[in-house]
Amino acid sequence: SELLQRADSGLVTVLDVRPPGEFAQGHIPGALNVPLDQLRSRLRTLPDNREIIAYCRGPWCVLSFEAVRQLRAAGFKARRLEEGMPEWRHAGHPVATVSDPR
Image (cartoon, rainbow, N blue to C red):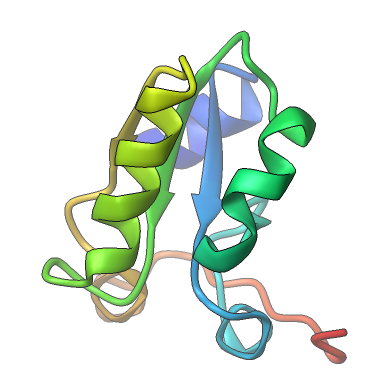
């Protein structure tokens, strides 16, 4: 709930680095979907005035680790959400979906 409050207040940007199909099936409300393979080309579209919180499939998913590494190398303040989407769902937090992943 703290993450959602911080995102709603504009203090952080929540970044889902999973593929679009996974994002469409369920993501943290308000999260931006920037798959890891597109991150470098989309860095300029990310707000640079707030911290970025990246997440993916779970605590051992390498996508979020790599995303944070790339973001920090590009000068962003970034960290990863310790848990991923499965843990988010299991905890009963709100989940958003989209009908068409394209």
